Image (cartoon, rainbow, N blue to C red):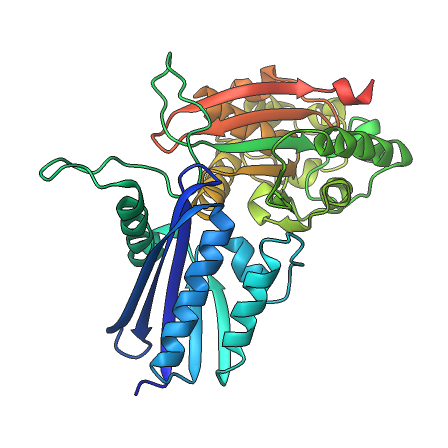
Length: 374
């Protein structure tokens, strides 16, 4: 009998809802030895239902093995957060499944839940795909299996670019007005709140997003991820309140550190450091005094984008950030040079949209839309 085990579980649906299946593997926590595997086709259900069924199968298998301590590892943020008690379970299809999982978990001394990137959940993902293949009919012998998505079908194939697969769709919302932005001063790491107008702008953007199709999936709001600064968190909270979601923060979405130019106007910074300011405008590797260059920001934002895609690949995300990080993400989508940072204007509380495809392609869908503010 193995007392301490690891459960890796997954589920998927080819259509959401569509033909679905789950996979679960139980391993010895000390040796990584596979102790049990479970997989099953489920007919037509949603991704989230299939993920919960995978968890339930894994917990049942661990109980059969006589385990007392269980570490659950899944790439479903929804299941992990709900089973950890941090997110509410609102969808009626999920509530009885979560209750069944909780009853199974109560039979162990301890159960922990950890989110892992999908790449680290490949064993359970393979089992889930095998279950779906069996349910839908495997390809003829000798022919390679088609690469079908386990989460959602392709949102679109952009024929003229050749982009394929399910893109990660980023809705990029700039924060509302602050006193610094009203005075057109460099506002980087200074943690200033929204003005009354800024709060109204955030509310208008939130109302617009609440009416946008596809931002509530299986009764849950899509992830709402903010820069850690107050002005973005206040804007993001307005969106979360409108969608019934919750705000997460990511440090990679924070604004440029303008160093000694923080709080200065463009003219004041140019008067203070004329040569450096001129070089900064023409060379993205040049930082403000005591600050960070746009090249550094670009690397930071790219790392943040890659982390978010690894965690939420193929989903829609609302990112609430600042001028430079949003311009940087649009620059990546356009495969443009750093001059775009100085040639693209983004208004307060504006909305832009960029999609990143798993094959490396991208598509910019919207830039600086402020129709919700009129």
